[in-house]
Amino acid sequence: MRCPVGRRVAGVYAHSHTGELPGKCSNFNWASRKAVEALREDGSITDDNYDKWIVTTGDCDTVFAERHFDTLETDFLLLPVQA
Image: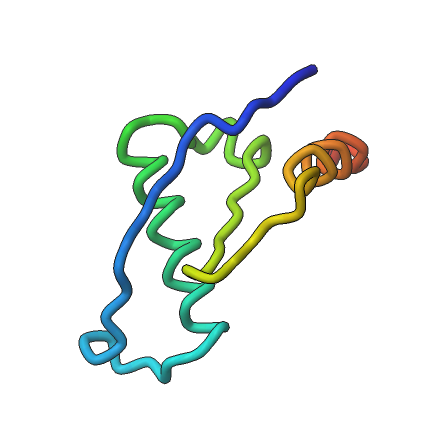
């Protein structure tokens, strides 16, 4: 089964409006929540298929290795199915 990268969501996180401390953890938390929110709004992620998605975040200086997403997809597909 081939699962191509199908969607990119970009956003700007304003720390001053959230009350959170700036840093990697708060950036990741915010980006993950916003990505899932956008995918739920357009119907891509539903209660029936949320466990079939991988959400990856990166900062402006993130450089993914050439085969990063291939490896991520392979590892995801090899995970045991949970009942």
